[in-house]
Length: 477
Image 1 (cartoon, rainbow, N blue to C red):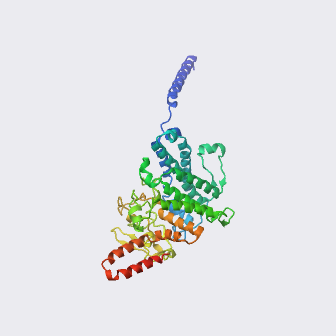
Image 2: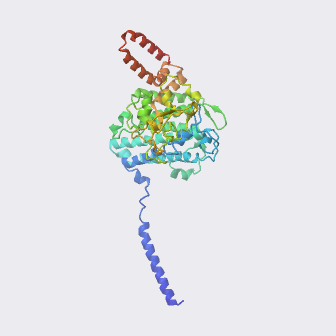
Image 3: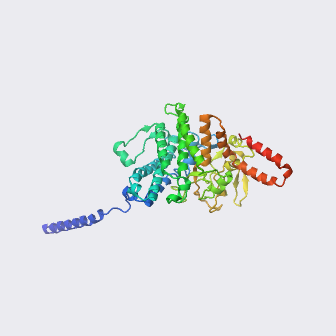
């Protein structure tokens, strides 16, 4: 090969190299449009709201309360059992308390809970540092304070769920980018210590988040976001777990010596919710589930649905399988994989209207008729495909995601927590009974009002029958 050709080749190669370098420089100097860091996200109310929405999103999906955390993990228990059948290293083994580290349903829920914790940590770390947090308008500051409180509350819920299922866990209260610099491989922390941190966080969150009636006054829309009642109710629930009996890593089941301290926290939080006038129970248990939850209603006039995991999208990452995996089948579509135990069925009085809402005794055929089921084939009934409206789902539609919301805390939970805490602190007081009976009497009150209306046409019998009705109500004590 001649030297003349080599010189030309060398010159050409150098030219191409210079062209490539100068060309690449222009492109490499540009910031990728898909790369968004905290300085761009936490700039104002609207962008911060999007970050908070991302934290909320980790509640649902197949790995969250869409099915795993809501319908796989709690079963079996003394009320309902999960799917029967041979060992599958999957959902059946979870239901039979035969879970191994290699179970296919363990990793994703654990990861999603800690993803939610991480998303919340990023918000908790950045929101108070925003210039608008301290120097914005009063409305902007209140909205950002609310979102700060929401992030603290969501982190507490994610952690609480993780502790319930895994016990002692690493303490992860700062963003991973910060934590990796000082403690990249954290060890387990005692669950009681974690609970203490969550109780402290929720006390702060309660001072930041508005009551339900105050939401619109700070410029927010009244929707399904967390309000002060939900924060306080979650704090009461965690306090009761902190003060209650639990299995420790040394194999003992015990409760702490200072357990009454935590029952007092629970009672105080529930008392403040009850006296706030912000929440009440829906007077009809059936209407609560049929006309509110399964009707996919947005408004909640009573405020009973205090903390919900909302679902959208009709897909695995962001929706729920409530009403498909569980509940009565329609046209043989659905799994019907949550089954009440016969012993639980017979705990209900025959006149208790909650029984036929909590339990479903039928499947629905293609023509809309109901087909009764044997006692060994009954299913849970609060989430039902045949009750879903807005819009109705056709019986031939094979869809599995219905956008039904998993109920994390209802006002009835607050009343029952108050009764339990009051009973532990002071015994079976009138206040404890009153709280329990507000839950138990909701449908009985409706029955009474209906009967009294009918008795208006029976003046001779009205006095005696009315007396008997009220005496019957008194027996609930």
